[in-house]
Length: 264
Image (cartoon, rainbow, N blue to C red; front, side):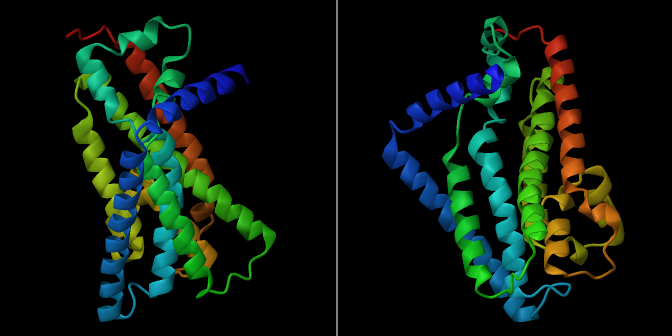
């Protein structure tokens, strides 16, 4: 409980710093909304020409995209600064986190918030409201709870993947290349149904880099869109999130142990 309070104290400091630059915040949020509007338009144009993608219509694809935006918004708002770890390592400023009487991970997680997350959350919420008017959401309470759990799980999966990739800089000094590759790959995968790709590619994004659990499998289950019977393991987004977070935490802790400082 004390650690959680400390984390929120760090967030309050980060928020205080951000609100000093209101115009930058507003422009940043608007730019993210415009960028997502362009992405949605491109998906719409593609579906207009091909009618469906692997059985997914335009509103189902919108649901898929907005589902991702909600989880990505949570990730981006609170954990979008993993790219900063490389600079902290290279300059030796990470040493500050080691001499303070608080967990280095807690300090790093609470160091910043990102307006990009606000923009993504707004797109997800607005888009979901629009989709609601086009798709019959006559769901039970259990399905709504499952959706909320999977949105949070999707955010945790993205946190874990990027935290693990960023932590590689304890060994390599540089980690942005790893982050850029996984980020671009994840962005590509969340905009389209995984079922449009080949069998081995689907295995890769399910078993090795399980980004299919961020929005595809939950959306497939919630909307009932499937090119094959739903398997029990496709419900495992929460479990995948917990396992990946554990792996990322191990990579981080092992990296902390070998960190010797880079200096500047």
